Structure formats: C-alpha cells, structure tokens
Image 1 (cartoon, rainbow over the protein chains, first blue to last red):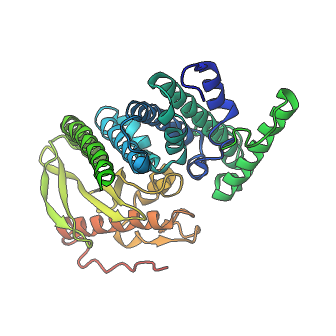
Image 2 (cartoon, one colour):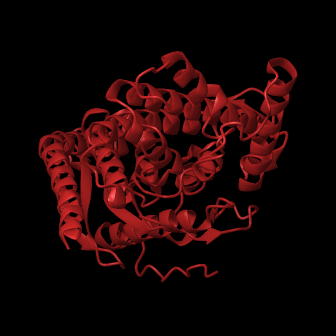
Image 3 (cartoon, rainbow over the protein chains, first blue to last red):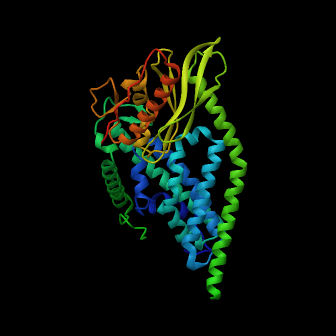
Length: 210
Length: 200
C-alpha cells in the first residue's frame, strides 16, 4: 500500500467489508466465538477492541521508524499490552458501570490476532492518520461482526435480543454453546460470500489475501 | 555486537516508556477507583439489609478455608439486630468470586450479592444471573449444598457449563453462613454439622 496516496474510503470499506477481521481475514475467531453468545457481550467486546486498535495503530505508526525490525513483534506486543492495561485502569476508575459489564473481557484483548496483525500489516508502514483510520475501520468491522454473530446466536439460542425475551423458550439451544458458535460463524461467512459473489461480483473468502 | 546493543536499547526504551505510561495511569486512576469501590461497598452493604437504620460497621474478622480474611457485620435498627452480613469469596475457575451474604435473624439467607469475579465470560459469569442467586434465598446452612440434579430444589442446582463457578459461589456462601451461625447463632443451631461437599 502506498504511503503517499492514501484513500480513506478504501481503508474504511476494507476494514468493514472487504477485509472484515472475522468474516474475511478469519482472525480472532476464538474471542468471536467465546463472547457472542449474546448481543450485549459481543457489542461491549467490540467497543473495547475498537478503542484499543485505534491507540495501538497510532502508537505503532508513530514509533515505526524507531522500532527495530528484528524485535518488532515483542515491541508491538508490549504496546498492545500497555494500551489494554491503560484502558482497563481508566475504565475501572471512571466508567464503573461499563467496567462491571466489560471488565472481564478487556484483558483478553492483549492476545487478539487482529490487533497485532493490523500493527504489523498496516500501522508499521503508514503514517499516523491513515493508521488511526485503519484501526477505527478494522475495529468497527470487528464490532459489527460480533454484533451480527451475537444477534444470530442469541436470537436462535435463547430467543432473545440484548437480554430481552422475544420468542418463548429457546428455539435452538446449541447456538449459544461453543459448537453453535462455529456453526454460526460458518453460516455467516458463507452467506456473506454468497452475497458478495451474487451482487458485487466478488471472489469470496480470503479476497483480502492474508 | 553493536547491533545486539541497538536491539536491546530499542526494546528497553519501549519497555521503560510503556512502564511510565502504565505507572502514571495507575497513579491517577487508582485513588478514584479506590473511592468508587469503597462507596459501592457501602451501598452494597446497605442494600443487603434495607431494614437497618443504623450505620453498618464491621463487627469482626474471620478467615475462610482458603486463608483469606473477611469481615462480618451486624446490621441493626434502633439498636436491635435485623440482619447479619458477611463478606466472603469462593475459588472459581479463574478467579475468586467475591460476595456479600446476609442472614435474617432466624439465620436463613436473606440475600447474596456477587461483588466481582473474573470467571469466563459467557460461561462462568452466568452465576451472576438472578435465577441462580435467588436459589440461595431463604435457605439455611445445611441446605447450601451444590447439586447437578435439577429436581433437588432444596439444595443449590449448579448451572450446566459453569459447575466450577457455581461451586465457588456455593462454597463461599457456605463459609460465610457457617461463620455467621457460629457468631450469632448460639442456641439456635447448637453445633452446625459439617456440610458434605459435592465432589466431582
């Protein structure tokens, strides 16, 4: 990707559709399965990842000429861990209500492949502003994917959305179990690929090529 | 050799900077967090015994089977006891589940509140659900036993997929109730029997 001619529209479109972290790059599937048994959990996790990705991309981009290429992965990991810790501390102090809901998930973000991969693939080669936009777009893509999975799984598995009961009983209980997470993920991926091919002439999965 | 030094220095510089960022954040957020947590604890205590009119102050300490110290309280209204409260915790899958337990004056559980925990999101955190916690209400010491048999509503029915977290809550509540019964139950339960733990 060229560092001079940056098309923000393309970056945003890539993050949300073309290279959607979950459905296209197939990264961070583990948390995507783990937290999407409900819409709310998926949404809160998505929001936390969104902020961390922006901060990490910004830092890596600023330090890209300083970080030694041979130790870039430990450097990125440390930057990620720092921002995750800061997010955790700040939320614990100033956003108590949200923290009570999300506190469990925040520390997990350190190990998300998508955060590290954007630092390596994009932020380390691009200027500050495009890196921030990429972090935001990828974070938004991740958030949307989790919410979509959450809606699908919670509605089928518990008959509810955001904790509100809509259907009586639990139509397909397995959808909220871990196995159901994989079913949901596969179905969603296939469905999105089908839409892509049918209506947008895309090539289907892994068009991102990473 | 020179390159090794360069690599080391670049890493060390990042580590120091990161440490500073985290340290400064901690310095400015921890007092706010401490005050907020203290206030939350006071509010939680009050919610455990809504009929108490006097301020709830610690009556003493006890230490649980896993060796951690906890406080217990006697909630009073106009000098007369209306509830007994204890803080407690149970060891779960990946954390200690910290709780408050309150007893009526007849030594039956009035309320259980989970303060904080670090159990698996989506599985272990189901112990926070009302349907699980409400099982404890009105139960006496000998009934607080975990079971997987959903027909045994006299006991505490474990959440499937969250047995270890269910056990953490049950054990923590059991410890607290045992302590409170020992402290305040003289004459009511002469010698509380050892409750058999369910082993897997």
